[in-house]
Image 1 (cartoon, rainbow, N blue to C red):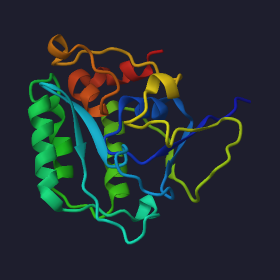
Image 2: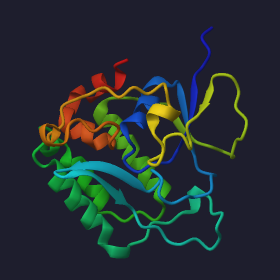
Image 3: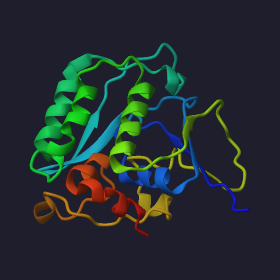
Image 4: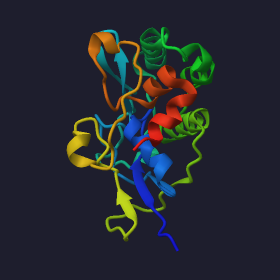
Length: 212
């Protein structure tokens, strides 16, 4: 009997392509909700391609009462009109892509409705993206914070990280080039947010994710 492949991932806001390759290739995925929340990670930020290069979008969070606040308790802040700013940034970056018009009405409601908790916002957005790409991961949140892993279990919680080079920390992940609207100007930018792949490639996103 084939061993079940299980991946552990952090919660992520419009996670990078690398993250979605795990959702596609692992039999089961646990999304960590008991880790201590750390800023400047994909938990509350994503990277898109603007006309002049990579652009990071960060969701402001309410400062927790304690330094060691679990991810599941992190609340979204309304500070700085971020929903409007993020949507404008996404629209101006991708309105000339082949599939932005096709998908924009799926995404816009996430920037109109107020979510209290970051993990709920991330999860609902991730599930919707999976449906659009047509991948069907078995996902659930963790029930405790694990430090030790059995054979067949892979811990990517701190591997998929904006400050770490995927070429060094995740040899499983080999980014496959795909059409990007600013490619002639910027050359290909690997491992951006999944929306970069989706808006540029549409239904072919699945093929790009699955290439080895």
